[in-house]
Amino acid sequence: MKYLPLLWAALWRRKARTIFTLLSIVVAFLLFGVLETIDYAFAHPDAGQSGADRLITINKYSITLSLPSSYTQQIRSLPGVTQATPLTWFGSYYQESKNFVFAVPIDTDSYFNVHRRDVLVDPQALKTFEQTRTGILVNTTLMKKYGWKVGDKLPLHSTIWTRSQDGSLNWTFDIVGVITSTDSTQDSTLLFHFEYFDEGRSFGKGTVGWYEVSIADPAQAVPMAQKIDALFANSSNETKTQPAKDFLIAFVKQRGDIAFVLHAILGAVFFALLFLTGNTMMQSMRERIPELAVLKTLGFTDQKVFALLLAESLALCVSAAFIGLALSYSLLPYMQTALQGVELSGGMLLPGLLVAVVLALFVGLPPALRANRLQIVDALAEQR
Image (cartoon, rainbow, N blue to C red; front, side, top):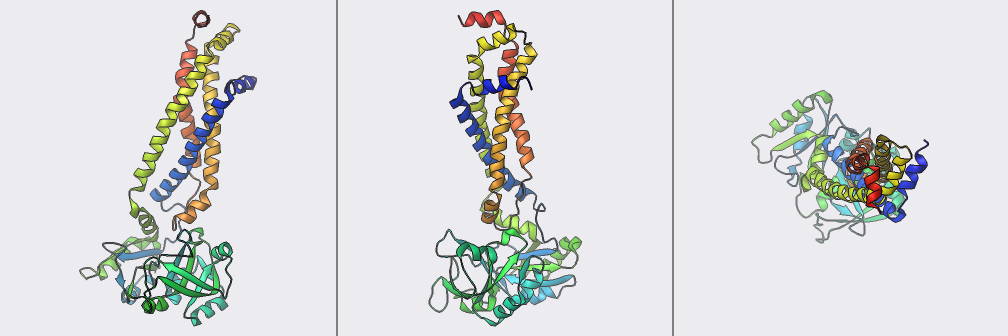
């Protein structure tokens, strides 16, 4: 503890340089926390995900290709399947494209059977919904966000589905109730009638996007998936069935190799940071050669001088990394909203601190070793 004032004075010897170095490390570890958390969620879909007893059945060749709605009863007839519900991507937003909402046309009975644990609705609101052809149930989070209330007319713009009546992409619904969810990834969800959607769309009638299948025994997920796909083998619409967790991750990954992109960005950031921080530490050491020589003259051993410089590097990198990682943790709710279906956690914060220690050693060891070898007479002679 007695060396802390000396360490503090060394760090703030050049205040502007220290502040800018600190900020660069904060930004780097903010990116690290955000990107590695997302990458970890993609690589470990079991972490934080629910629905182990749920399978997703899509078209074998692409999720953009539809399946016949007639598959519903065939899937339900399989032993071990407790329920199957059809779903379709509506692709909608409210007023502006930035206001994305996950509106889903559903078969009421089967949907709430499959989602009985994670989607909750008041029985009276559900009854009203069943009786209202244009009715829509809205997540409480969205109700608060946009100030909607039960009884409002809700206009949504679909990016895909035109109306057969007028060719418009604009659909209007009546808010008849709210839903709450135990899964925060469903905060942007709205539910409306598949019958209203199927009758109103100008193309694709009688088809669905995918099926959610609830099974009795989660341990039999793989065999059940094979049985479902065997039902439609060699048909004109073959299927691919997989656990819900794998499907959700694959859905987000459609845009490319997420892991490669994330690691490439992190690699570039830390490569630049290594040179920036290393140069700062070397420059600081060169400026302090006379001071270090004086410390050795006063009785500081080579090992103590070495430890002081290394501690300086550790203090700078680890404290800045902690701030950056804390900021990334505070962004988790916003990232989770943007990445529908992906549950994020702060599990990468501790590895981030370990990376900060490794970075501190990389940039701190060269100047510390040079200071360790510093000869008092030579150092004072150089500064004459």
